[in-house]
Amino acid sequence: MDAQNKTDDLDPRALAEACASKMWADDRASKALGMTIVRIAPGEAVISMPVRRDMTNGHGICHGGFMFTLADSTFAFACNTYNQRTVAQQCAVTFIRAVQEGEVLTAHAIERSKSGRSGIYDVTVRDSRDVVVAEFRGHSRTISGELLTPHTDESR
Image (cartoon, rainbow, N blue to C red):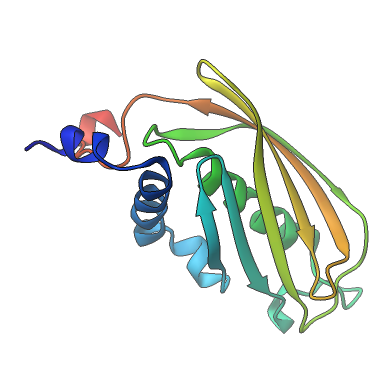
């Protein structure tokens, strides 16, 4: 049985989880920042990240770039749940509240629209008190290839 047939046999949730596992195996950036996958489902992802001292800026609060990175990683995991390699096309973030060192942030990405090769995903980032600290919108673009099918170097 080839890899394509194996993925065709998976239910949507199992496929989403298998895609996340494949991406996570090579995602050194998210791991280095202490991110943890909380939940994966088709078109959806939840990822958490602790705010460490080395993530704070000159104001003593979490640098916005780290909050953006958490939202962006969560967006990436949500839009890659269908075994189609998908990348960010455009992203925007609105920072709502400052975040202190020691907080654990949780980002929840949800698919809002998927048509052809394009998708729109909203990501809400909350602190450990469940207060919204940032809102992110990502536009995705599906590119060639599949996550769970072996690729040659030319297809990457």
